[in-house]
Amino acid sequence: MSSPSAATAAENRIRAEVGRRRTFAIISHPDAGKTTLTEKLLLFGGAIQLAGQVRARGENRRTRSDWMKIERERGISVVTSVMTFEYGGHVFNLLDTPGHEDFSEDTYRTLTAVDSAVMVIDAAKGIEARTRKLFEVCRLRDIPIVTFVNKLDREARDPFETLDEIEKTLALDTAPVTWPVGSGRDFVGTYDLASRRTRLMNEKGEDHRDEIDDAALDELLAARHLSDKREEIEIAREGTARFDVQAFREGHLTPVFWGSALRNFGIKDLLDGLGAFAPAPRDQRADTREVHADEEKMSAFVFKIQANMDPNHRDRIAFVRLCSGRLQRGMKVRHVRSGKTMSLHTPQFFFAQERQLAEEAFAGDVVGLPNHGTLRIGDTLTEGEDLTFVGVPSFAPEILRRLRLEDAMKAKKLKQAMQELAEEGVVQLFRPVDGSPALVGFVGALQLDVLQNRLEQEYGLEVGFETSQYNMARWVGGERQAVADFAAANRSALAEDVDGDPVLLSSSGYAFNYVREKWPSVRFTDVKEIQ
Ligand code: G4P
Image (cartoon, rainbow, N blue to C red; front, side, top):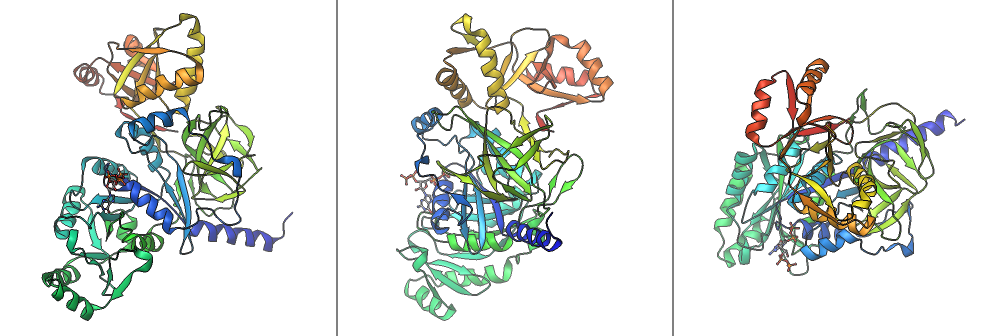
């Protein structure tokens, strides 16, 4: 048995480690600069290896897998990974979200695993469609947002206009921390509204930056015929809201930073801001209670499954977000859904395409757990407690298809493959209760290619797609009796998802509305929270 003082030391260590973690994602519209900013953040973070926590495995630079081929061909990112770096005493876990709209389901799930988000906006374009959509998901979950207005080295909109747009379209208050002095060819640098010093943009990037005071700035602006910028700064200083950490944490206000990811400018301010304001791992809601991040016992949930990371090993990686305590390699945990015990022999940290064994990890961290299908999205792992984290969503498919198998002898194999892929969250599977062939649900069109490709490469199955009379699926909920009555009366349009939950299939929005109006006591939803 450990002594009381040892227990306290362990508790203190967990508290300190958890407190310095910042787990975040970047949300943006394609082309706003997410990839460039990610690269620059990693560069700034220096080594992406946490001293003492990981043991490098040299041979582990993995060959790219098959759907990375699709990614390469199409120039899009379909892989979600996590990048860890240390800077200014903080450990940053940046969860990468797939860039393509078709993979929004993965993106949304990734947002369930972060504590804050950086919203990247193109200084010339302002808020774009996808940014708004992702922002709405963040708002639903009260995820605080830090804004980075990018591409100031190009012609940009008036900064007041950009702030105004954020406030109006997102109903989010803004508090600029820095202010851009000019833009495009006239981009001088950023003015720190609190310290009243200007950081000058230079060709070498921010590591070599120069700072000047107001008097020197006045001279510089006069020499470049930009004196009107001085007035603008004063208006910004006097007329914009001060940063309020509580309003930020509650999701009502965003601190705004300006810069150029490409020119490596403004990155340090952003990182300093994240370290200073962004919340440490938050408490997580479970079915029985709230779990506090600095509790000593480890708990985690699966928010993503990825198969085929390595074509040589047909393993699946479950990405788990640690919600509390400390994970140690080799520890035994309870897989709550099955009630079974699992040993965590090979937890791994992922760094873009590389992986390393994780000897230990803390709440806020994301580790990958290789497994052969035991772990599903939404599953909870604990040190024994019977609790399940709630809130990992599934989204209603936008496309429904039936599969046509080229070789009818392989029907059994296809059934098994589809069950595995559905559990992994690659596609959704709906089995009509009348016994007719299953329907496959896709959230975006690219998912069809991914499925076809994976069935062929991993299972040796050639399939085509056929349309069916159904175009919509909605989960059915409500009081038990109401759902039972509904199911009895609508058997021909009823299916079960991979968890056995009832789903209504409809041929059109019109048909769906007809049913919905007829059954007011039943709830139909297009998002299912995995419980
Ligand atoms: P994304 O991941 O959000 O889709 O954006 P990404 O970083 O790929 O950037 C999209 C384009 O915008 C890239 O140009 C990139 O170089 C450019 N970019 C990103 N940040 C800045 C910036 O601060 N200033 C300027 N001027 N450009 C920026 P591209 O021509 O599409 O690609 P590439 O040929 O440069 O790689």
